[in-house]
Length: 116
Image (cartoon, rainbow, N blue to C red; front, side, top):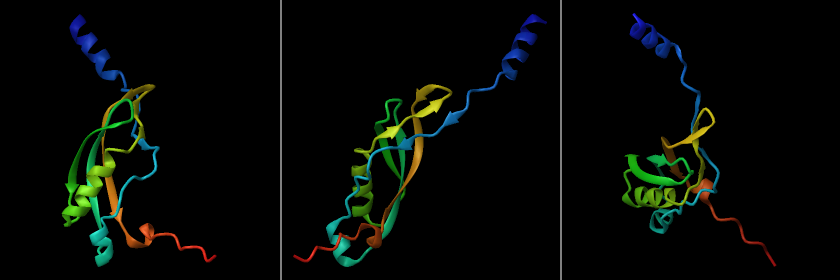
């Protein structure tokens, strides 16, 4: 009976709340020049493992944009991202996160030059 009571006590303990990783660095994604020149837009969704230190350990394409250059640019940029790590209670932990990377010409348009 003691083992059953112990098992019941374990099942009543709640796991500490988890908070997901939060991106803290600027977006380091570069629009592939040939796709920019062609006016092509797209979105690549990555699955990224953020370590308990807030760095990216692993990256894979979860959903392709259909353009290999966008997918490669997304993976390359993700390696330079920095995050506030996920937390389980007060403890930083590694976690997987889905990261959509949009290649949108209106958002990525170069700033207009100033007239002298």
